[in-house]
Length: 76
Figure (cartoon, rainbow, N blue to C red):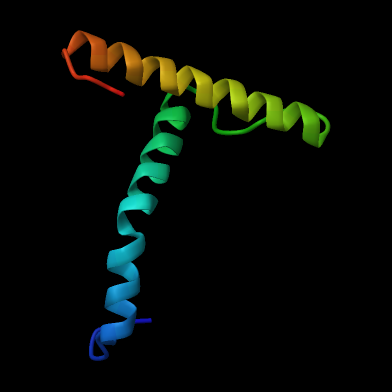
């Protein structure tokens, strides 16, 4: 870890640089799902929780697709 008087090493900086794009994509998706009103998943069982997350991800993807189409951006 880097601190005030102890900067990150070159190896740590390289690792952060490599994973930053993936991390940003995932964090933006989860932030958008949180904004849609689902901070917690209130289901009983792993299967139902997985289904709830899948449905939230599908809604997020549809929302992004609608944005791309309205902005005339080729999504695929």
